[in-house]
Length: 318
Image (spheres, rainbow, N blue to C red):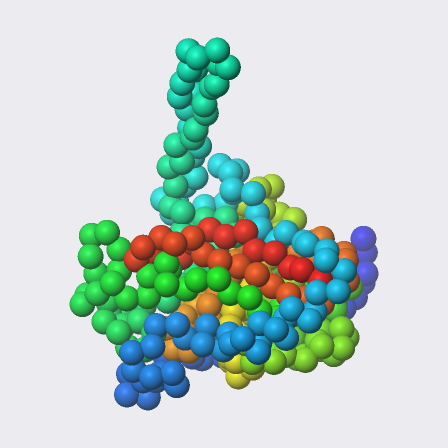
């Protein structure tokens, strides 16, 4: 490749994707007296789940026309990417062979894992803090027990049945994978929605496709440290649409490394300040291939008492 061609290629990349450094913004949680109480009251623990009402569930049901079920959860295994000391180990147990004439045997497994923050995972409000404060300014040190948090336990979330909307940013750009650390902008989200003729409504689950689920289990280091995702500006735009959840096919939903001077600011924005759930590590290739941009979306975290999150196996139904 000549220098001229390399220059033109680099220039085309800037036209298509923009310079992520130029998109960097500043953000930090508002002081307690400005962000609390939440719009659902000082004692609220459900946050954006309050958007789910019988009428929103029925609206999602009406999107089911063919009965097709598309699984969006990653298989849990030791080959997944992990952060820090997280792990997932399965040890099989051949427990017994009974002596009766039918000779019934039994098998079990011992799973050694951080079950709340591995695989396709649902982030609850106890997962993230600003200093000693959670969503709705509840104090962490006042609600901590050895066997789980007294506030915001993931067991309280329950089943969520919503309208799901796929925002396929990779398809918008005409590529399989968004570039490393690409900062998804509000314009990207709005253009992808316009391309699929969709509009967001309060109580939606917003699912953002980058194409990076192809790397999980194959290029784990790259997948888990340098992924594309929404930046601060896109996070602020999404919050204004009043979703129940924001989800993606990356480890963190938001761009990594974080914008200069920040550490996962969208996590803080969604979970701490606004009470919006996050859903990470989805498998979206089949959903995208089906051309499904609007569907019924169903997920329920495991009832881990006092837990911060849960491995989940969500589905889209259309």
